[in-house]
Amino acid sequence: MKNIDIFKALANETRLNMLLWLKEPDKNFPAQGAHIPKGVNFVGGVCVGDIQEKAGLSQSTVSSYLNMMQKAGLLESFRYGQWTYYRRNEDTIQALAEEIRTNI
Image (cartoon, rainbow, N blue to C red; front, top):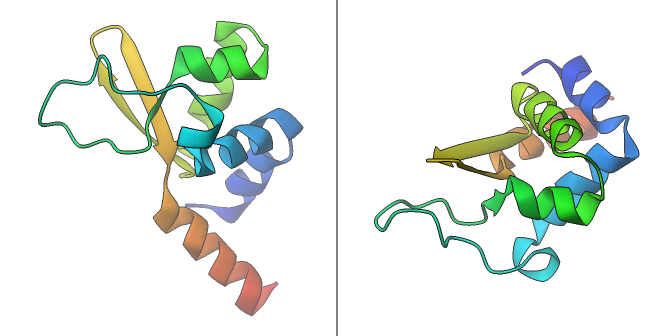
């Protein structure tokens, strides 16, 4: 994780909103998991289509945004068939918060 990549990802209001929405997926999105196979634990994951609908942007833009945040370490993903789910990477977010608290 490079902090500059994280800050670049968060410098866009929509990407920041996506991260905030994913903090409380049950509050911000319809029930998830219809396409996740039994036995797979990906709690808090939200389908790209639901994120796209909430953001009101094209699928390609939303996918690009999610990919950027994943590469920065802010998100984790799970793909099953044609569906991809994303959730926050709380370890990275906590490490960033600690870095800001202690060094910035």
